[in-house]
Image 1 (tube, rainbow, N blue to C red):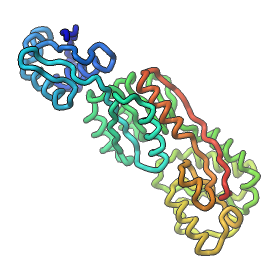
Image 2 (cartoon, rainbow, N blue to C red):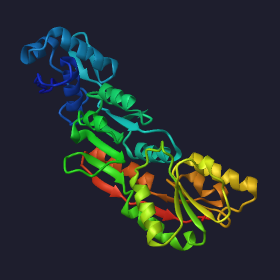
Image 3 (cartoon, rainbow, N blue to C red):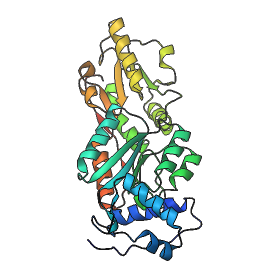
Image 4 (cartoon, rainbow, N blue to C red):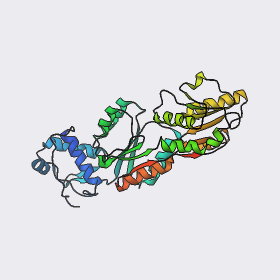
Length: 333
């Protein structure tokens, strides 16, 4: 084992503490291959002389990294890199069937020496901010499902853009932030066009769009444009449980709770799904292939999204991609 040529330069303008900056510099050096398993770090005294940091700050940083099993020490030779694994922060909005598909394909596509911390912000800006700030400098890569909030964008930009991937929702920008997001506008309307012949068999087309959903509101605009273009009786429903389920209606639902409500209402009233009442659900999952003899969905391929995200994390090659959803016709329409 040899002492690696590791150097550290303090950034006085950084929002991070001196200890956090040193921890980040060491984990970054491991992540980009400048430090390898078995390489020795400078001694506390040497690094103090070279960097200007106090011995106490360096000792605390080394101790923190030892607790995280990133480095180890011997009484006679000092501190060395003990684990060349790469730690990834995955911050999702909530847990659902299609998020499970996404995460499963992401995790399976990564090598074994990558460890992943899976966290959830549940669309709470305070939780989102705290998780991001707590994670700064602790991970080699960050995969984040964003929240549409100006305050949150400032928090996200604290992450090194070379280590950050935005998933699912967002707006393609002109800066360096990588993304894999959905098309909620033109491709969404294209999916409705593909199902037009079946939608026209019903007397009324309803978009169930709860006021609390984080789903982009551009879907409402696209829905209204589609209905106007094809002279369909289209209605946007914000509170489904205030509305009766009647024969001749077709529903486009965003949330699975509303999907379940419609299916149960049809069973209670003796309405046949796919004939008397139609359903299109947003976001596919294995369960929707079998429920009610199959639920028609508009969905991106979340396994593909997970695989692409893993490729970014492993190879650190930036990706700027908008995934189009597709219409998967099943018996509910």
